[in-house]
Length: 363
Figure 1 (cartoon, rainbow, N blue to C red):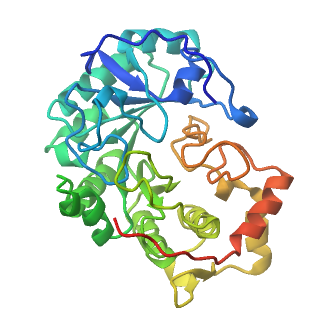
Figure 2: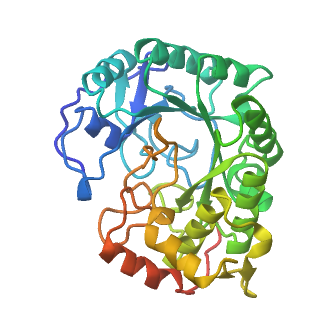
């Protein structure tokens, strides 16, 4: 996906709010990097990441930005690709230049003492300069204080993201909290989720969950159902090992596991099924989605359940498609950043009923 760079990297020491890191796909959309998108999966959401010389103070085991990973923060990859540093001024100018292709901007916080204050400043500038572009914030609940979410809402940020990632408290604590000497706590993330739903409204808070961190499909369906019942929605990811992270040797989950979780997410978020209607085998795998076979086949044929789940544009179409964020471009697409075609659907149908398992290594 990456071609020769047309971007002059900023000098070492550039920090937020004046500088941000931008995803490789977003940099290509804005003409900051040359290259082409596999199967024309162009990104319409500009994903931005806050940046500080000290980096992120968290230590999540699967993240390329984790505190203990070797190397300077500015050179650490994230979601397996470089995120070049660009000035906020340049980002605004490029978004104006490519306005027809920019349908949303998402700012991601990192765990840093200045991130709340600086994120408010960044978002206010983006809204002032690009008033027609809807804004999302992927927040860091560990940092938030009373009143912060209301401040974001008043800018206005219209959608809030919360990366809980792990489907169970045990997995969360092992990979993000006490197990890695990290600052994040399960209860705190859920408290901010519930507060976010109250402030932003039903359907406006998306919870990131990663399939393949050691949970069962039943546990994943359970937490997705909890999110839906509480007024949120799920943005689903397939685990994809980040080189240099503690989980760099952890394998991707079997594709059948991910396909069933994708279909379950779609049914739950669309209000077509609840946890009680699913059936599971003794390994916690989904064996029934609780719908008549003909209706289930009709939904599968849509292809939509197997596309990236993320924030939409003003028409309701998902634009935060994160092309190939949880897979490499090629035959093993996990989250489709475009509508699956007939050939894709034939493959998906075979994968959906594959119940392969493999043992997971120790962290």
